[in-house]
Image 1 (cartoon, rainbow, N blue to C red):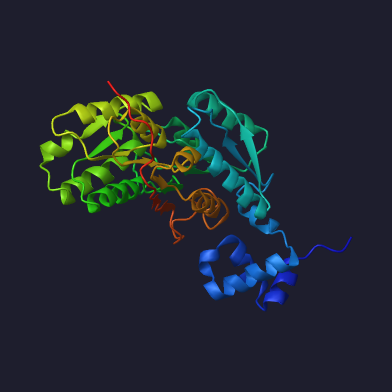
Image 2 (cartoon, rainbow, N blue to C red):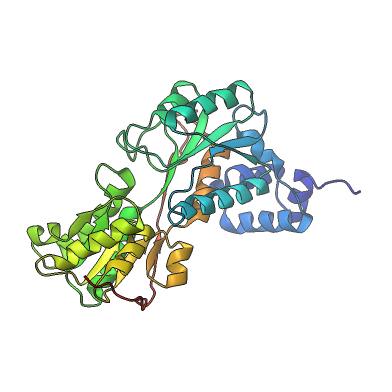
Length: 347
């Protein structure tokens, strides 16, 4: 078996210094795009495995990232975290990092798992998902000096600028703004919204995108816009009930945007009319049935998480002089499809 390629081999093939190769692996934002492409091409040609990036993790013990395997909810929205986990595992492997999955029954149990994995030196850092108001998990990790990044903002603390909490998130406000504007631009006016009860950091963020767009571009009064909102628990049956409330209200509704694909599917099933309904997450259900939905760029989310874990910050705020942004907010995209020909409900 031949000798494995080294950083020096990559540097020689790309015609750059070893430091430049290291920067491409650990802090790619510091390298000019053309140079970065040459180095990445050399890495691919030589089959080099950039294990050096793992050393950016603070403890330098196991090159392993711990992440909780969330329980399945309704099989629709839960697929989003499955896709994120796949993207994270695939990209971590390319950096010579491993992903360790663990389960927990609730946030307190997850904290106990953090402590167990920390005490056993099993992981170097944690990735958290499903952040929420007053999340005790992030407080414990900060207090105990653990490296971590969350997929989701620190809702209820300091959403954008908490210096001790490194996070990556998708701009749901932008996504619902795009969805609502798309329907308004087709000539519709009364665009309803089906979302989760507040407080819900993610849900409230998405709702703002709908509300701001309606206030600015629908021509309706604030009272008329307020009447077009229905809150519901997550789930297909709740979405079906919610759309009936909108359609039965004075003035009815021309179209609907939803906080999730589960709610959108319910709205499609429960609607007594063939109105456009847009979901959020672009799950396989949305693609197979054929309704429009906002897609989260989970590959970009995973890349951002790994940048914060292995780059200048190393999963925690180490130095106030580091200029690399502590947070990543990525924009989703609207996937437009024709209104599916589902049978309408009668009542």
